[in-house]
Length: 68
Image (tube, rainbow, N blue to C red; front, side, top):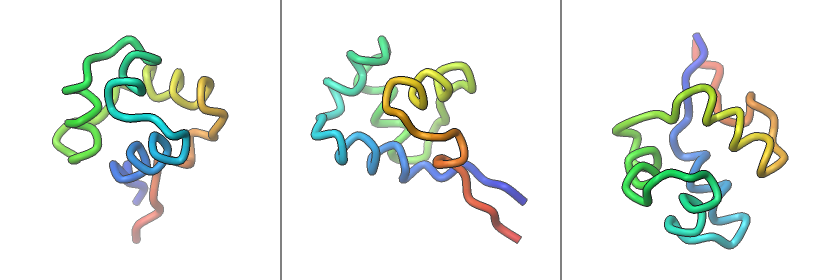
């Protein structure tokens, strides 16, 4: 089974030296949305996940865990 790993959003944001507001601004979303993603309460839409991958040069698999 493959699962979305919500912790990767924060890891990516911090590794790029951004706070939640800066990360949100780059994606055109609210800071609250980023906060929800980082807490695991919500997940970004797939289209937005693709945009994150493009803007921050990561593969989509970066955000997923293979859990058996």
